[in-house]
Length: 367
Image (cartoon, rainbow, N blue to C red; front, side, top):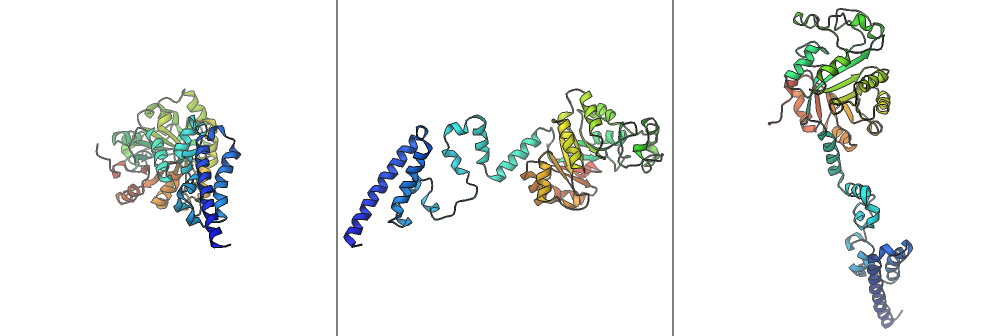
């Protein structure tokens, strides 16, 4: 192709290019009244025709912007998740709930995570990290007794953590072990004993004679005595008490005074999924780390589908795991702190709550 002709062709191409860019701008303004294929044809044609004759460096910036990219982006691969284009959607697409969802999606991932976690935490009347008395203040009183729970209130804990098992006759008894041997003056499996027998046991003398005569509590008694005064973190020890728990909470009415201060957790995820179906308003936690293993990405995805809390063992807790949990919109409580030196790393990692035998080990924020 001779030089004069080439120059003339290039000049003509620039004129055509400018015309198509102008058309693209006009059609973009009138996009609401145009068929989708028309807008697409304008943008693609304005880009395709000059590309036959000119290198990309010769494209006017206006032509590049007409197809939605900057000159700097023209030679870069498209990102896999491009959210900035949300601002160019027709307003009808982002009206109402869709508009709110679009605005949320446009936030950076870390900002979305922080906002989601903060919103979940704000429904609770406690500053993070929450201080959770493990089986009550079990460092200074017999575990899972009214004495230990009263001490948790006195020492300013945010929550009492307690364990629940079902008796032979279907009562929900507050006790950790499968048998009564270690923490009472009795013998036998909780599941094999009636409440009439369990109610007569001494659950305090094993710890100190000053606590002689402390009874095993029923969960219904704990709810009656502490609901609305302190948070309750209830662990179902066995995956067969969901019906009894649902019946107990339903009988109390609309969970007033309990709903926002009651969490039920278990090492049995499917038990918690079932409880979620029985009581959609209840706050659910899944316990992990019993075998010393951190939960996998697959585990976390599964748990986050129905649980509000993914709670981890102390020796598996670190900032990375906390971030992985928060990224899925869940909160995390760490169990169990028994020494002051274990607290600082958890604070640095950003955990939401600390389960401890001694609530005084966890410092309170000033004010």
